[in-house]
Image 1 (cartoon, rainbow, N blue to C red):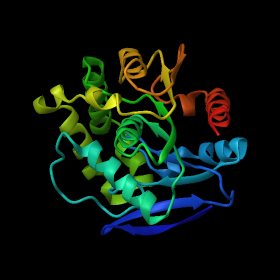
Image 2: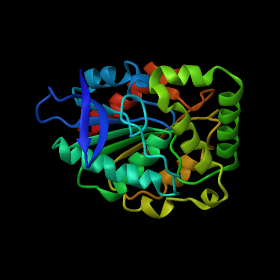
Image 3: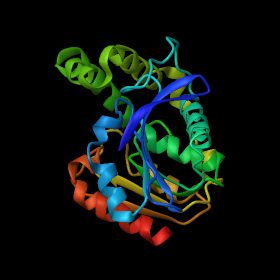
Image 4: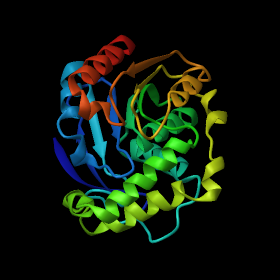
Length: 256
């Protein structure tokens, strides 16, 4: 799969794009708060092969091989800005039929994008996304910050993000742990989602409860199904890849 830098409204993003399946949708993969293209490993390629779809995987600004993010404080709407930038990226590549697969922050960005740009989004797979802030989420972020301060996590992240690690950790933890973000909530957008939705969640997710799933699937306007997995945490596609792959490919093939 070809990889390279693309300029989207002055923002230089690293993308990997395969559009060899003519007239087929493109599955766009949206990574989590400390993720990047490389950390998806072979999951996107396997899902493309299973569904006969094209794939686009990209690093958000500041992550992976994309250029650094500006040194500014994130505000509470940062995921809406990411959804807008995703739309600009789709326009730049002339992608009109999209299936979104988003994990964690990426899952939230997928929901926001589907609510704002429904004409482009054929279906959504939201894995461990958030629509509001819970105590368990705040604890999860605090635990991650402690791990960053006391373990070799910075070194492990540096392998993927280079010298941008401190900036992305700071941007993520500061906004999620701020008082002003406790009231963040995107439930008001859910009624605008008409695309079919699959919400995947591990029952042992230490960043969110099943309330995230139930309140999402009950408020979207399109069809929605939940896939709740016992004894699995925040990253089902890494913890039980084959099960998630089978469920996601079945969902996508039913929607094509």
